Structures are given as structure tokens and as C-alpha cells.
Length: 508
Ligand code: GLU
Image (cartoon, rainbow, N blue to C red; front, top):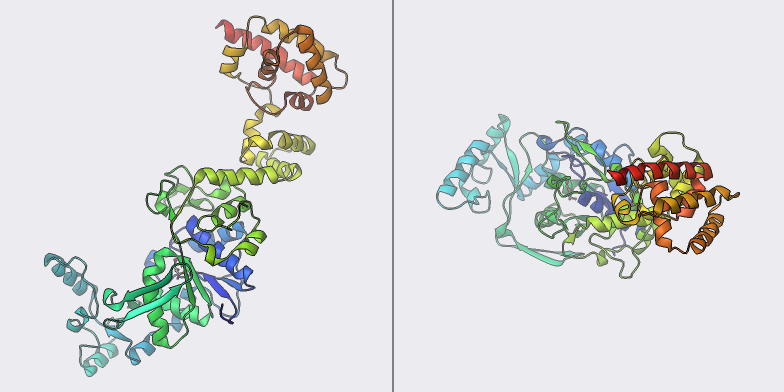
């Protein structure tokens, strides 16, 4: 690594909510910075005013905050290299574009959008669908390379709209070493004369990105693979300015679960899972769900994202953010696309839920229920239900019978386990229960075992019907614990009511 201190940036464009792939890019930048005692910066790239979406910038910053990967420099935070929103740096870019014109690396182009459109149309008719403004075509277009200098001066003096374009050199191999992909070589004959500065007085992404990475002393550019095709132009721009280029690392794409294509923003909830970190409502009022609102813990979400394209080289899968920082390296990021796995995502959430203390879970559950439940009771409920839940809300739904009497009875158990002799057996079991003085799970279990012995019946004949009467369900945590939790009176009351209701079900 170079001796320069590590400074990396996440540079989203506020064109909509942040896709989870974007969060992964931010995460890898964050991990890389922390691992190398560097600085993680957020810069908002909003030079394309046509694609600006109100609320997107706030969304992005809020989502990063939720994920716990906040920048040390960025909008609203500040820093020595600000402002960190490109539209606020607007005035800064033009001299850089002009510097390139003066050094013959770029040129003014006066062709109107209509002229270029008709050029494209004509080319298409002649069987050339990919017409470009490039080293060949520029020779016959209206630009400062073809027009006499005094005419150029006049056009500029008259405020004729123009753009500044990169003057791609002819037939030059551009090479750079990508940390993840190795050497990349692209010949300039395959590249067009990209616009660097637009007629609306704004730089394009390419120019602003390079100028800002340079001014902000960015040491490593870590970004999605979709930017790889732009990298040769960027390398050339650093060269044209005479600046040292940062190191590049292009991250693998996130693929759909079936591996069929890239996981895009448009996939929204269409595939049955969110693609955004937090909820996003469009201007038209359409809601796209987010991991936060679905009930994912941020640590589970981050842990899952870290593994989309990276692995620690060991069997360990559960990593706190600090552990990720310690283990992360770009060398262990893979080249090939990372398939998103919604089941694995749930698995991570499950693991995190299980390892959260019952006290902590009870607090979250209380917040979710928003209804002043007794805290000690909630702690017990969490202890009983956490192995069966993925999300906090599952504790409430899966364990609904811990809050209220059952309203229905599992049909399969009723039809398979509820036999003719069951009511009498259950009534006897109720009598036994009513005699237990200390209604505590070990005591109930001891009584249960002697009841089976006395009646000479198997566990299946009693336990499942006991559960059915008390909870209405076929499965759950220890019935003895459930009984203790509900208390003797409630337990017996439920059993008596259940006996009546199930008999009615049976006769119908
Ligand atoms: N503004 C670009 C984006 O929206 C940033 C690309 C880069 O990191 O250079 O992803």
C-alpha cells in the first residue's frame, strides 16, 4: 500500500433510494477505511440535475446511519475538504475543464442536441446503430478542433451553448491495475469523446468525480463493477491533469437469487424481499419496503451484506461490525457476481435474534407492541419464543397465546390426536393440575410423568392435547414452561373452555 493515508469515499447520486448493492459499496469502503486507520467520506454526486430525486440524499444519509456506517467527512458533518455535495461545488469545475482545453486534452463542441440526434439517425439508416462522437467523427463536426480559432472565439463570446468533450487519443492502450480484477487494458479506439462539461454549466459525473477525488485526496476508489467501463476515461483524465490516480477496486455485481441478471432497484419487492435498506415512498406514493421496517437488525443486515462478494477465508459467519473491520481485505473480494440469497439473509437475522439477550429483546418487543406489558413477563416470553422466531414481530405472533387465549385450535391435531377417550383423560389431567400447589414447570413435569404412569398412556396422547387446549397450536416451547407462565388458574380455565370448543368442533 502507498504511504499516502487511506481516504475513501462513497459517492452516491441522489437519483432515488439507495439499493442494497450501494449499501454494500458503502460498507466495503467503511471497512477498508477503518481497517487501515483511514477516513471514510460520503460525497453526494448530484451534477445530473435531470435525475435528481427530492428526498434521496436524506434517505441515503439516514440509511447509512441506521446501518452504523457513518462517514467522518460528508454532508451535514463537514470536514476539511468540503463542501461534500457536488452542486455546492459547481463553480469549481469549469476552470479544470478549460485547463484541459488549453492543454489540448479536450475541446469545445457546439453541435446542438438536434444536430447530433439527426447524425445518429442517419448513421442508423446506414447500418451503424452505435454512432459516437469520437476520434473519427469529430473531424466532421462543429467543434474547436474543426472550426477556425476566431470563429470559436466568436461563438464563445456570443454565449453559444457548448459542451467540453474529452479528446480521446487515437489508438492508445490505457492500462491500470484493479485491486480485485488485476490488469485492465482498454484501447482508446473503443472509447468516445465523453462530455466533461455540459451546456447547463455543470460538470458531468466523469469530470466532477475526478476533480473531487483529487481535491479530496482519495487514495482508493472502491465502487461497483458498473463503473469499470468508465475507469479508462478516468485514468486518462488523471493523466491529462498530471495527477496521481487513486487505486481502483471494482466490486462484483449483486445478482438475483437465481443468478439471472443483476439485482436492480426495479426488482423492488417483486421477488419477495426488499432491495432497499429502509422503506422508500415514491413521489407517486408507491411504497418500496426496506430491511429496517421488515424487522431486520442492522447488524444482521450488515453481516449478510459483507458476505455478498467477500469471505473471511474461515468458517466463521457471524461477525460484528468491529470483527468485520478486523478481518476485511479487498484481496478477499471475489471477481464474480454475488448471488443474493433471501433465505441466508433470514438465517443471519435469526442468529442475531437468538444471540440477543432476553432483556434486550423484551425492550424491542415492548416497543413493537406499544402497549405497556409487564417487562418481566415480556422477558419470559422472549426466552420461550426466541428459538422459534426470526423477527421480533414473530415472537408476538408465534407466541400470541402467551398474551391471550387461543381463538382457534390446530385442525390437524384436532383430527389426529383428539380421540374419543381424550376428554375424560384431559379432565383427569385438569384435576391433577389443580392439586399442584407450587405451579412451577419442574413440579408440573413431575406430576405429568406420574399421571402418564398412573394412566398407562403414552406421552403423545396427553402432551399434544394439553398443548392444544392451552395454546390452540401443535408446536411450541416447553408446555410446562408455558403452563407456569400462564399460571394455574388461566391454564385450567383455558383447558375447560377448550374442552367445550373442541367437542363442538368435533361434532360439526
Ligand atoms: N455517483 C456514482 C454513483 O452513483 C459514483 C461512482 C463512483 O464511485 O465513482 O454510483
